[in-house]
Image (cartoon, rainbow, N blue to C red):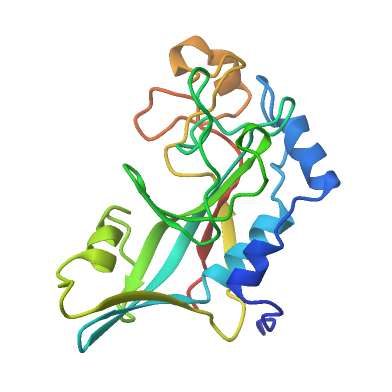
Length: 235
């Protein structure tokens, strides 16, 4: 299958990102306690970004050494702060129920957290009604070697470790030449949340399992069924 040419680079694509009203309606219609029925909806806007992100790579330079780190699997995390918006309670960088709102990340920040590293593309002018959006690098390849899926935390080591501040250090994104072919799946070990913002315990929701919902990896919770993970098809 011939791959389509990239029309925009990753920066421009993230900068101009916006979910269409049709996409928002479809996500919101599935975002309720009963969950999805039938084939889950895959946002075309997420797929477009994934095809571009999975075609490019990080060029990491430290002194005279260079390493190429290429994402091979990414997950989208998207949360609208405004009332009635799309909710994704697992998002780390969002406003707390009590306390001061969190500032809006600039475009392209590498956000380090306990689950790995995100590329941010948040939107808005005020934290109270911001759109929290990021791309978690779930799997990656180093210098063309087979993808490493052991832990996204290893990416931190690849991007930051063993670099002296006296030798010079830089991380630069390099776009690919053609869009990657991708396949969608659910996000790894992400639980579905109830209307009160609590993870849905598997033992309390047998009716969802009877409808075809699956369990998270630890088998304690109902898996969030939204197919917001995209993996590069290796050809």
